[in-house]
Structure formats: structure tokens, C-alpha cells
Image (cartoon, rainbow, N blue to C red; front, side):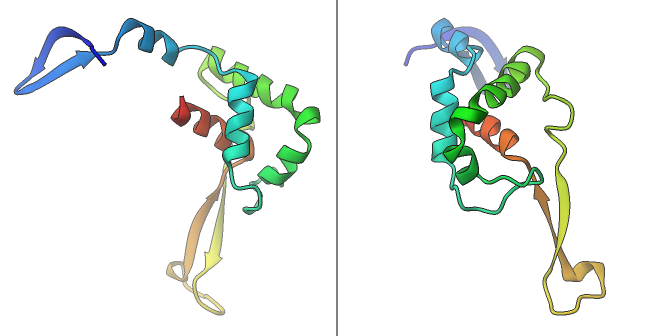
Length: 126
């Protein structure tokens, strides 16, 4: 794929720009089909996020949930931020040993809601 060269250099590194069509595609909105495809790519039986839902729930209730899911996506596209409360992860401490008593005997994990996981995957796929 050809690129435009704007002669931007940093030492021996040449920076090249994307074609205009590719650049414009990067700021296009996500379609319902793209978001649905990403949701269907996600493993459905993994543990639920802090919202209590896993992707099997979202897949089996897609028709009822798609309007709300797409609203979250559209708000993100317009504002660059998530609706209040959507991006609040929870930290859970999972014990590494039986009967832990010290903090280093726990493994912290972040529980992120399915909305955010879907949106992040959309951003990587496109």
C-alpha cells in the first residue's frame, strides 16, 4: 500500500502517512454489523464483568440489548469518553494460596464490563 511521504524525520527514522482513504476509515463510525461481529468473536462463557453479564447473555439477548449497546458506542465515538459508570472496573483479589494472610498472597484482577471489552475489540479490529 502506498503512502504519502511528508519528509518528517527523527534521526534515521522516516515517518510516513497513511493514505487519505485509510485515514478517513479510522474515524468512521462503527456499524451495528461491526459491533455485532465483535461481540460474536468474544468467548461467551468467560466470567462476567462487574455488570454481571458475560457474552453468552449478550449474544442470546442481542435484539433486546443492541439499541443500548450501540448507544454506548455512539456516545464514545462522539465524545471520546464512555457514559458515566460504564468504564468503572472493579479490582478483585484472588487468593494464590489457601488461607492467605499477606497482600502478596493475592493476585489482583480487573473486572471490566462487557460494553467496554466490546468497544475495545471494535477499536482493534477496525
